[in-house]
Length: 200
Image (cartoon, rainbow, N blue to C red; front, side):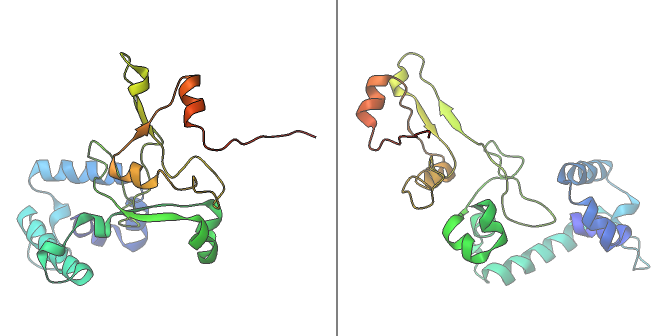
């Protein structure tokens, strides 16, 4: 609907700039829809004056054709996570496919959007990859701190050779947690490796 409402009247270049900020784009679209009728709904290439009903029907048909092309003719295979994925990119992994093979984590199928409880927004200009999410999640049990949980994206280690480089990625993507170890006794019991940093 965004494309069918704005692209022809804005032109290719201005349209691409306009959809960079999806907040503005979606707010404008919602306002137009709430009005019920607007010149933006009319296709300037036809003699007929189109309205919101024509835009909805046209957009639905195009969306169904797009999904069939991308995901096949079986509607039960049309899963949002097959299109909407999330990759944890390493700075070097973005510039080199070879480096990305070793350093990037994912892609993972993701639910959600900017409008969901667990927001997983995507850019209209570069659909459908997620690019944003919670940098950490905590559940703190103040009645029993040892019962607290936490998870971070990817892993705790910045070393891609470490098993802790990506060992929390699937937990984070699926909304799961691991124990949040807080007291010294539990930390010492949970310790598997120790990193010693020496200064010269």
